[in-house]
Length: 459
Ligand SMILES: Cc1ncc(COP(=O)(O)O)c(C=O)c1O
Image 1 (cartoon, rainbow, N blue to C red):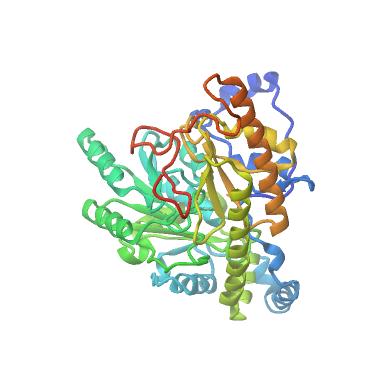
Image 2 (cartoon, helix red, strand yellow):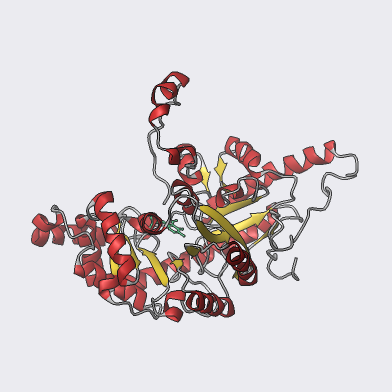
């Protein structure tokens, strides 16, 4: 998801609301807006440095390659590229998907794959297929902010399991599953972004991956593995996807071309066991008939050149440098009490500030300084959580802007810290305000995650 200039809708007047409100479906009452989408209106201003989006750096895609591909499509496939296509997607697109999944050691049956309109639609279709109002869905805390509005739209009861530097705490998951068993509730699925998670940047350890898959198989419980970032690794050893460990019986896999090629082409995919896939296909027929045939041709042409791995390798080099730049800037400009993750891949750093700083308030201040980030609460269904955290993106802008953006956020934080120091009697120095709460015990609803500042002992 995320970010291009867009039109701003005029606010709804109370007269309009009164006119239509009686017609709304009950689900609209719990629908949530996407924090990143909301931010797009402001971050589209050229003077704003946006560390908010999840934007890959599309400026690195060679314009010559783009032009040559489009020319080839025009010469050989105009009619098909402008026509409707199969709901499941073209077989050639599925071949490209198999190549990408093969690069991470997965070997799905092509019949289990559906091409979707981005990974976002795949999440939506999975929920459309599996979730009735009131059903339990389990995900990470924090979770992908774009999944929150989907779970809310389908009126799921969402339970979030805390993450630490090794991803979702599977022991906590087991406690929750035992409680649900006692209540006679079977969760519909566990949703996880195990590799370079959005928003936290952390990856699930091998041990936890194995345990999660074991639980899924023992309990015949579905796990939805959403993995846009698995191939964007800067350091450390690759970890097997959950899908690979499971073999595809209980893990539904969601992938996307957005972060390894382009989000503008709006192409992703889902892989699911045949009975689930049958329903997903029906759901997609009702949603949009088929995904763009034009951009499926684009993907086919691109993969036929055989350089897609080199392009990802280039992106990895660029993002590694930007991650380093952001970490350096955080050390320089964020207060000593702040903690942040130092991801081995992906696009995001999750930073947590002293608990008295509300990052939604801070965002208002930051926007006045022409810089944006995603406030942590967007990653929680319970919006009272995540309030002192923020998601920072390091892939969408260059080193200079990262440094300047972090400097501006640091300035806004320093002002909040100073204000807090002035308002609290027990604080003697604005530079050393009351110590923040650090790690919360699992399951107590705390907001401050026990992430370590890299290079330090456990928080
Ligand atoms: C974890 C995760 N899932 C899904 C998506 C949706 O991506 P798209 O619809 O562009 O494929 C994103 C985008 O940022 C993401 O981070």
